[in-house]
Length: 413
Image 1: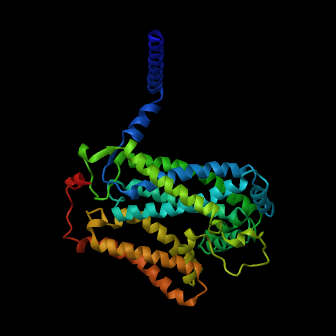
Image 2: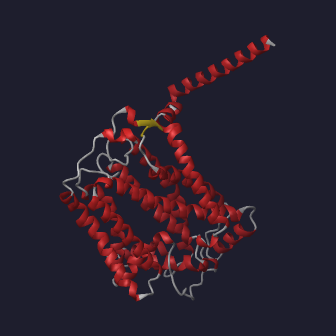
Image 3: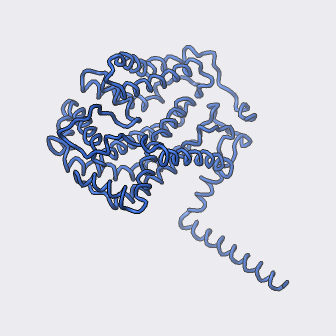
């Protein structure tokens, strides 16, 4: 028995040595294991991070899930009018587990945009856009725009009633852009009305941008790892006693939020599937019958609301695009030396009102047929621009009493 145990121990030691030799051999030629060890296991994270810092990991997992389910759906999807709708019906009814794969893809898109908005809010609240993290913020904004374009293109693909008319409304809005509008809308449309070319081009945009998003995420993570993560105190921590390794501490925290996110996805898929799409989209596209109310998915409602409250088509398009463009400029519009809104009372109140204004624009987009909401929407839009162009640049002057905090504050977290 003793000889057998010695033999087994020797075999285990030999296996361990072989694995270590392979890792050393590979790292000399391609430092895969050492990079994983440095960037995702031993990577130092401020120990006072709260739940707001878990959404990046959730977004990464959902993106991976969306790619897998999207590739599966492309195997059965046909990018031709009428055939597109029938192919979706076939996936739902005839392909084994097709309804589940498509529901995961749809629920994933809703959750992805929801967590993306929360991720952006966290960056605004805690000043994650400030020096030296300007590139982290800008790469995140490029990612946001890419996701929004991809999500809209994906919404067109089922070629139901709402998909068809949403494509028509957006292309007509693009045509109002001076000089390039007509040519750009003509290229997107491929004719005078949405047709096979329109659908094919949206399908190409949706498919290609999905992989472009993966590349942008890669750049975003590189930028973040280079300058290290921000924290709720808004202090650049230099002391090792104020940081913890990413594994296992923050992996456990991210895993908990991922579990809750998975539960939300299960509820959406099995108990509230009607929340994932408009019922009008279960009707094949009909160019001769306009829906009673054309409205996009919830994550585009604020921008659609802006189009509804501005009488001029190009003006509405410009102001809607401007709401995104302003976010790119935030690192240079905010001159305050204090990062976190915890220590900026004026900015904190202004940011909360900004969220209310953004939600109000979404309500206007949903119920734009009620004229009583139009002026509320215009006031909300006015405040949105005032927040970034007036309050944000000037708030530092009225918050002179707020002082930068010493990193020792993080010791008690």
